[in-house]
Amino acid sequence: MVEEIGPWARLKFFSDKIKAFVSYRPRHDGKSWQYTIHKASHFVPFNVEKLFIVLNDMEGSADDYWGGGELGGGSSFIKGSKIPPDKLSEIINNNL
Image (cartoon, rainbow, N blue to C red):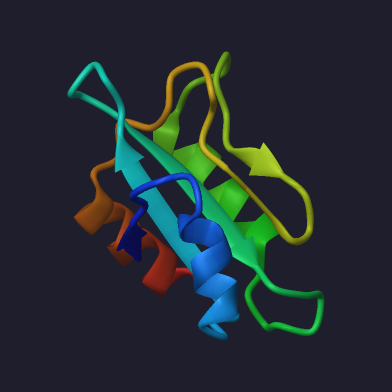
């Protein structure tokens, strides 16, 4: 998991041959985070869609959700996530 700094951070991950990543940045409210989960191709064994299901259950909110597609997505653009990065890392590692 990496803190995303700047608009070109994700491109740098792939240019450095990183096959899958979880990035985060704190939101302006100081109480939540914006997360991105992504993998380079369908051949990378990193089940992004399974993680969305697990994380939606953890957030417990019916009106806000994690989502995306087979290659990537993330937390809600509206509210972000209340799960702190260290806890999110633990959840992901336990569900891969």
